[in-house]
Length: 397
Ligand code: HEM
Image 1 (tube, rainbow, N blue to C red):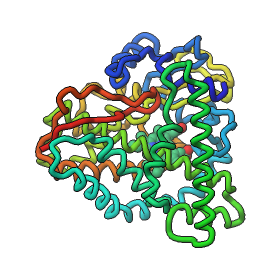
Image 2: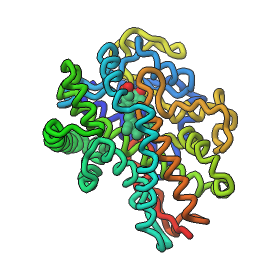
Image 3: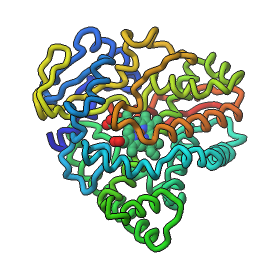
């Protein structure tokens, strides 16, 4: 499978989810697949799809059988997400130094200041686009600060990041999408190489400086890997967190009793974040490539075949969760798979949780009531792997 084929995984061809309502509510399709065809080989794509919690859990965590090297590395950079041990072990241990819990906790006041600043900008307005005004800029500003990149460049970041993560809208657009994507990656690399050169001369306490120190220390992290990591953070950390915040607010709009409960007891906000992760997961599916012969649910997977693990479906599996289609604020335990599982478990999970908690705290403090703006048309992200909203117009008071 080359890049062109992997792009097809994100088109609606594989799911048959075409309208905006269908794209934002794939859950009845998942339910049908779990009941009728929980392990399904898509002939046209040549891709296996798994939908049950236990199978998804195994595919994403059994590194000896299912490889994360799903793309042929034709990209000009290495991403940790796309590696297996021992390469993964080495990269992960290096980058974890730049991502310690102490560092994350230290960002709390800055994240809160950014959230407050963004809400101040729309204060007095009766309407807002939650995505444009709040849930998009917040993680971008945070990641930019964390990396030590000027926040004034964030508009450009958004453009690059959007291009790199977005899927084609139809099969006909595949080549065009790949070309635009390659161009954006090239520009991002040029951008980072300037930043890195400047930082080499003047090392600071930010994450890029920490990574440069790791690079210079016995040459453990190559320049290519350094680029790859910066780009991975920019992309992995932005859209997913934006979508988590917007999806949470959408859940409150759908079910106002949650909003009221959270207003009464903001201490429940971390639970709302976890339940949003399960109920409307920002990442819906993770691809792996079989390394060896494997068996799932009585089906034989051949070495080299791609398996798409639908975590969005696993999170709604009735065999694992009681009343999975209900948003339960106090759900406990809540073993969702939204940050993955095993060695590739999301490095940014503590940061994403903190950002979402602060964003919702500040948002709830600011407004007594929220409603969908009249005439708002559901506007989902155009991807089956990433899940969220491109805009969310709301009336606030
Ligand atoms: C890995 C989801 C936020 C950085 C992952 C994986 C998932 C995920 C599912 C596993 C991929 C796999 O197994 O192939 C999410 C979600 C987020 C989020 C839902 C927000 C709600 C962030 C943030 C950062 C980040 C804020 C960094 C600033 C990473 C990195 C990896 C990763 C570096 C690769 C880890 C590895 O391969 O060892 N994320 N992520 N993520 N995430 Fe996140």
